[in-house]
Image (cartoon, rainbow, N blue to C red; front, side, top):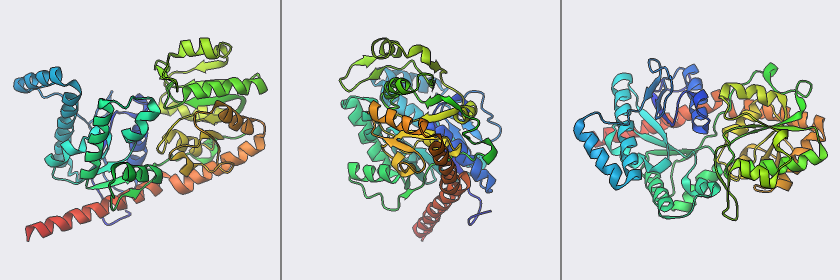
Length: 416
């Protein structure tokens, strides 16, 4: 057992189980809590949206509806007046109920939750334990990448998140960049905040990518067809790659039912985008849809290059998972990706939103297979040394323990 004592910590996740949700927070919570249990701690998962989860073990579902007649009437009126505010209040009440049960039944002593919608400001006054806000993706940074208009709804959410971050007992961030951006944007010092990377999964050496076993005619993209993940940039880059390698095909693993907003504000469905921008590519792309996490490993092993085309990312699990498998990676130089990938060392980088640059990065790997293999080996080594779940779990446990120590000391002072 590493640390002073076993910790009992709850983690909020937007969905469960991991295979039911293509979400980086879910992957983070899954990987981290497994490692914490291996180290002797007792993490618990509070899930907002659960499908066939095993609630008898370590997962609790948030009950978002109050069953009393009076509460149903109150909620119905609130939803008619202000649907978004009512949903936020309902979610907060469900989280408080689940957390209180976890405290009473399992001795949970700390809650870690994301910054989204500033929910912590509604939850913290109603819980007797400290709360860590994890900066998974503040809306002031992610919203523009998604093409969200800077309207009153955007401003209100960003404001709420700033208030919630300020009220947290502690803040952690997966990347130095997002922590410094948050400090600067809100003018908050966030004293004591810690940068703790997201963990990658642990992949045995015999299950990693190898040049001998990959399909050199296959590329892989894991993400949505939307502005944030750069599905359009990936398609445009692929159209350039096939001019040099006509037999190459692309696996597109992710939802394709979104509408994408381009730089000129035009709306594109995937069908329209292909018809107008890349009519010759439809039969060169295998549309796999959203894939469960358990099936992505085999795709990463088989593809000759994994592509990340995001316009912005904090510290994406999709990059960490490619590293863990030793998959040669062509990614965009944005957000926390630059803290993970060193161009030409453990991956190759391109300017975000630049199809020509991304195509050049992909071609750099396709045209030099031994170079790609060398990069893949270094990526796998980095995943083990820098992002192994045990390494991140120990760091996280130490951070949580220090907060609990401060919390206990302050409580003792208040009793005197």
